[in-house]
Length: 112
Length: 112
DNA sequence: TTGACACGACACCGAACGGTGTCATACAAT
DNA sequence: ATTGTATGACACCGTTCGGTGTCGTGTCAA
Image (cartoon, rainbow over the protein chains, first blue to last red):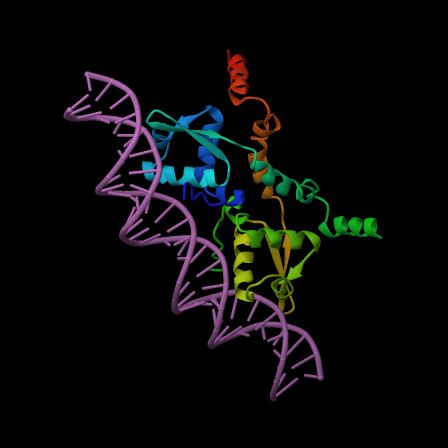
């Protein structure tokens, strides 16, 4: 039982605003240890560590041990799943002035 | 107390796979009542109704009463917030073969 | 070698989540 | 008028979530 790192849905990982803020901080700086991330939030070290674990389970961050600290860095690749998902729906708001049923009529004609 | 519809974070609303499936179904068809949506899932009518409420709180669906049924339709506009958020990070994976510190060096040079 | 620091792991707790079943009501159909 | 359907509202329940505090261990510094 070397690692019990569960698999976590990316959509679930980014649902929490604290975790999105962590992602933003790790986008600014190549790598950051826990004790530098913690003071950015209104919560204790343990709570931040838990959020980092969840991000890690979703594959959104990697970490490496350097001395007595563990440095975390962003691994944004899994966010591609989110972009792929959401970009399917952009046609539903870029044409937001067009009536939805009209859009669907066009799709019906395409399939006929 | 006409409506106690809370405000819900869009990221939170799309975190659940059932709710993403609801969005997909409502993207296929202009509007659908609850009793037509329910048999698509392995859960009862009440559970699906709760998920629809959450989507409504996030502004992702609208509904209108037609006779004794309530028809739901997609309102995808709030998904734009998700796309705006995620597209900020696409540079972190489109250049995924480039070393991250090299990317950051370039940004340092830009600011100097 | 002693002490401070950084961290992981764990127990714990209240609140929210995701489901259930039931009841009341409004509308449709006959 | 009666019966069946579609729904909202609600109580309920087990699990997960998001936070806390604490303890043990490894590492750096003096």
